Image (tube, rainbow, N blue to C red; front, side, top):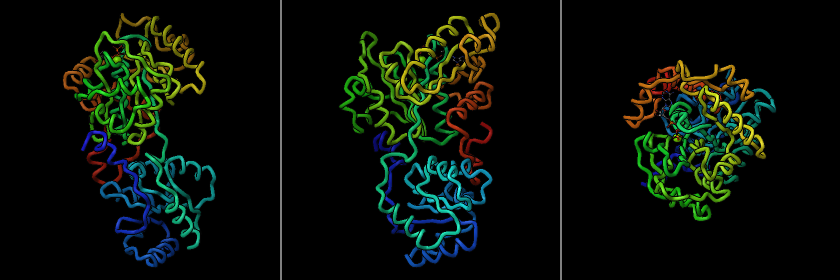
Length: 409
Ligand SMILES: Nc1ncnc2c1ncn2[C@@H]1O[C@H](COP(=O)(O)OP(=O)(O)OP(=O)(O)O)[C@@H](O)[C@H]1O
Ligand SMILES: [Mg+2]
């Protein structure tokens, strides 16, 4: 299986056919709804075990160790934070499971929130069998969307000056989104000549990325397969090592076209974008979030401000976060955090401490900081930055999740 297929394999969308043993499952908190759904299940010949008690937490516990069904009916009425808890179903939804949420409150905000998190429908209790049949029929009629039902998030990381640590930040964020947020993540290194994302993650990418940017009309999945390398269970890298003397053109719209193809297998795309790169405007116009990486120096503050003003002039500009990297180096920094903030006109989204041993170990092993220094203050601050961008990660459900998941990272 090729790298792209292997990676995207977990994202293959299944049409919701209500046949077969893994067609349907329901986790419902109250006896009345459970009895109604069980009656309907029996009438369709589904095993009685497909209807269980417990609601969303029970569903998440089961899905932590079992394949999701094609259609899942899940009760959110006993959740203190239904939208937060719903994130525990993200991986199942990404893999093609259609979720009908069931709740006690007729709340439009909850309904919209659940749909935004990938629910296909929301039924308010009490409902009768006709409403259930209608909801199931709607899912069977609707073709499975291409890729995730949640839109793919695109985050660009740009250093305001050379060598400030943009690739380190981009690479660590990508690893955090993949490991801790359990999002299928693609790290795209658009520094085609000097980029080191592949090196930093110990993988080798094939040729292809350059052609994607020069001839976006030729991009197809097979074409991308040659360029993509897998760097972890949910992390893949798209990078190149083009000859230093070549000027590499970037067609307008090339990044958007590339992102559209990558979206079928990614819930998150992180772009390591050189500030002097040909496609800077193209990328900034297409991403949702921009992380500007700076140091607490006068030149960094000046260039952070100039880049910020340039980005703000773009129609539909991304949300800009500015982070200070390698902080705490006495005698090297010209500005305090608050002086820097007053120059750039916004709060720093993170202050990332200098940690030479951690970055040196990560570089020499070709592994992300999340692996070699997961309890360091540097990774803790980056973890908070990842949460600021992507929201709280799903809680680890079940024993397997607690033992091997993100606890303590
Ligand atoms: N917080 C940190 N503490 C110590 N060293 C760091 C830190 N962040 C990055 N570095 C180191 O600084 C160097 C430059 O980092 P990196 O390559 O990420 O910067 P960059 O902005 O992407 O550079 P370029 O402009 O060449 O793309 C690397 O050796 C990296 O390990
Ligand atoms: Mg770099």
